[in-house]
Amino acid sequence: MRMYDVILKKRNGGTLSDEEIRFFIDGYVRGEIPDYQAAALCMAIYYQGMNEQETVVLTDAMARSGETVDLSRFGTLSVDKHSTGGVGDKVSLIVAPIVASLGGKVTKMSGRGLGHTGGTVDKLESIPGMRVTMSREEFLEQAERIGLVIIGQSGNMTPADKKLYALRDVTATVDSIPLITSSIMSKKLASGSHSIVLDVKVGSGAFMKTPDDARVLAENMVKIGKSCGRRMAALMTDMDRPLGHAVGNALEIMEAIDVLRGRSKGDLYEVCVAMATEMVMLFKEIPHAQAQALVTDAIDSGIAFEKMKEWVAAQGGDADYIEHPERFHQADVREAVISPADGYITHMDTAAIGSCAVILGAGRATKDAPIDYSAGIIISKKTGDRVRKGEPIAYLHTNDPDAVSSAAERYIGALTIGAAQPLPVALIHGIIR
Image (tube, rainbow, N blue to C red; front, side, top):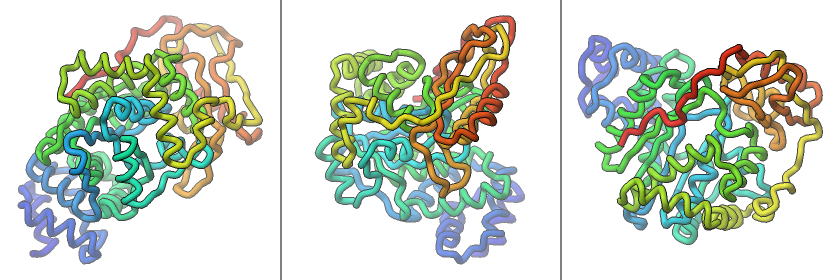
């Protein structure tokens, strides 16, 4: 079999066989197929697409290209979630303790932030002592004992995805539904959970800008997961404004604590309840209303908050910071962003707000850049809120005084202020089951 023939076949609109797809993935991971041929095939897939069977096989081949996690000991109790990424997205920090407190086995490998989006691992590392690396034996033991473990992504899982994503990123082939689907789902399949709930973000801070595009991606990922033997659901959630009020690592941990203690019931609470409900429905096999009642009770009764403390302590973190979040280090500079006009906030460029947090030190512009865990933004006015000229609409937290001016300018530039109040936008655009 020749890679040239595989490229030619897809370029001309043909359907690749299972053998051809596996030949490509195996050869590329082993270094026998060069980047230029892999890039040519990605471009052919970008233009010609893939049918469901092709995407299933591509996803499976990528999932099997490295190590996989065997969670069969947990039967149907293992459950995972994945977000396509956003600004202020601390959902995993809230949903995982809720689900684990209700008997689920939440085993999750998360990433770091890059660009305008935050990463769960960076947020966890803002808790003193918190470990995000461990051996496979420790990982499984903690899942068995407390039902919850979140660590950084293993270097040996889905090497095909790591190589292909880096290639797609520099060859303008990221924006392809089959390639996005296989990238996300290969990692989830390799992680081993029996049930998977996807959070597909929609809007100015998300990769998918419209509900229609998000629905296509969600439907594809649910189909692929089911074809590979997983229980699946996907929510399409709004990212046309930051989620919650905190953007930044320790700031987001503190907001997550507020939700788990029942002190905050805004948009973040609503999205987390919806996500946790879908996860509980899948692993318990119960109706929506029953699952939702269990989720809200887990918050109201305090068992989810207690699970968060247990989880943090199990991974070496100082759980006293969860009980007393005022112990988190506060940034030296806290500067108000002032509204430039009267009116209503009619739109927020969420990606620009995420990049504002990066300027303050909360994120990284390059993979190995350092993080200031105390830096970030507290947002006091969001889309739909009335603002008055001269009043504070956000607060910038940083230890770099020189960053304040450019960050404030970026933040103001991310807002549109108009005379008329905009119509409300749904937080949940739809659910695929």
